[in-house]
Amino acid sequence: MKKYFRMKTGFLLMALMILLWTLSGCSILNEKQMVARTQSFSEASKTFTKQELIKDLQQLEKIIMTKNPLYFTDETELEQRFQNAYDGIEDEMTELQFYRLINPVVTAVHCGHTNLSISEELLAEREGAMFFPIKVTLINDTLFALEDDVESGLTAGDEIVSINGKSSEKIINQLISNISGDGDSEVKSRYIISKHFNSKYYDFIDTSEHFQVVRMNPQGIQEKLELQAKPRDAFNTTAWDLHFTEYKEERYYTSKVYDEYAVLTVNFFTNKNSKKFDVFLKEFFQELSKRNSTKLIIDVRGNYGGDSFMAKELLSYITEKQIVYLDSEMPFYYKLLGFHKPVTPQEKPFHGEVVVLTDGAGFSTTAHFCALVKHHRLGTLIGTETGGGSVCTDASKDAVLKNTKLRVHYSTQIFRVKTDGMTDKNEVKPDYLVQRTIEDMLLGNDTIMEAGLKEFKRRQK
Image (cartoon, rainbow, N blue to C red; front, side, top):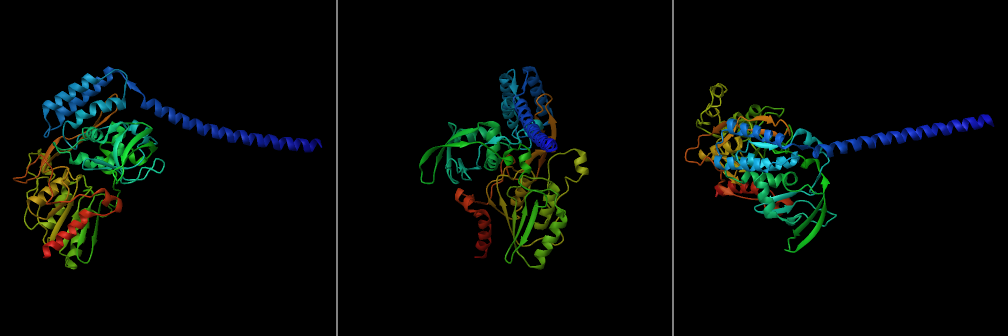
């Protein structure tokens, strides 16, 4: 009996130890979660002295005023923005508060390559942050829901009239003023809002966990709805990083040859595919030649730019004459690298019809490509205006502000393609303007691609 009692007691003690160990493990896990939450809160709420913030703004001012070409800049406006920022600095501001204060200074440079982003630390700690819960897009001057929100009853296709008492017009204007673009054009800024509304809304408008939304349904009826913020990793991006979020390696350029036409899609002018771009193009155009294909669609929608040598390589297949590419003054080492070399036609260039599909993402190298296609009449541009024109400033560098660790991406060199007679401070306008409606988006209709195919049929008549 004593032996049985000791055995039973032993089992109970063992069970108790296992229970305590399990509870301890759970306690440790919860403690780690709590520490992470506490660290996130403490970092997000970390404040800086007025003197620290002044020093960071002085560092930014030195970078912008001495390193950036300021090609598109109204320097009087920029100086006023800097003064407004200095006047607005208060003691014990958080990083986000300071970011919202000084970011309009950076966008006043009017350079799409010059951006200000939150610190790496704050970005990392925003994993799990609560964003406006459903994807939103911008079409002309109207915000639309792209997804249903089951809890509130918001439906994809509904117009968003206001959020938390702020009208969509005010939201759009505030976001535009905080997104960098070339010159006075709002095209690229509006495109970014259409793709990254939730991220920008969080950065510059509202970080609330609850949203009162006034929606208008397709029948024109307005209604107030309550939405709850939700974590969405896809919404956690920054001013410069968002240019690279939509495409993964192996998908930067693709092609498809059909019986009556071919499509070459260039999502980004970058040589990160497994097959290098020059090899890819050579094989693609050889296939077109073998199949006697005479109709080519080049789709550069969503393409923010990239390597100018790749754009020159693509141009060499659709031109029959030599083309001067850059005509801007450059340091000697750029000439050594071949930036000034003209586009030389391939021995057997493509002789068929070319249509180029465009949208507001296209600035930098993509805008240069589109400008040259239009100037030399190498193809027909169909879609919407590009986000940039025949001039951009790039050769960009990066810096980190000493105290807040805000990150500055800034341009240092002017790049101008030779397009005599074309204005250099505006977007490239398509030959045929075609824009998708909210209905097209919800139904998956690619009306711009359809317009490109119709252009081929029109020419046959």
